[in-house]
Amino acid sequence: GSGIGLASMAAAFLGCRVFGTDGALSSVELLKENFGRYDGEFNEGAKPKGLLLEWGDSEAVRELIERDLEGCFPDVVMASDVVYAHSAREELTETIRELCPEGHLDGRVVVAHRWRVDPKGEEAFFKGFEDEFEVEEVPVELLPP
Image 1 (cartoon, rainbow, N blue to C red):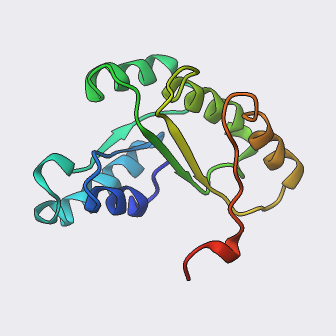
Image 2 (cartoon, rainbow, N blue to C red):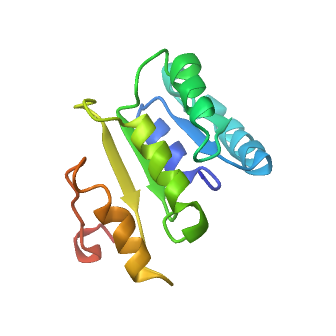
């Protein structure tokens, strides 16, 4: 989920067309409220949208691609602090693969992650993509302060 929308707003401020998604309607409403607070600050083509999208809902993913992305796959899928939820990893994996399918050469998936409760399961999540994506872990020491 997009949480409060901080990463989405940062991307929008950089000029990206952003769709912040969450599986909880209350979170989507919060996203829209937060996006609205900065409505006049975004460039016209870069106003972020808050949308309901539950991981694993293939029909909703197809609808997002057709309706909101005008039939195109996203260039970048960003996720932050989402892998720790063991109960939803399979659905998250499925949704990532649908948004960035094999053959979508320009597609990128960026996942910000902090190792938590289940390091083996979390590591398995990332290893599960190695045959489809070039996986690179960026050590925290290389990130800006």
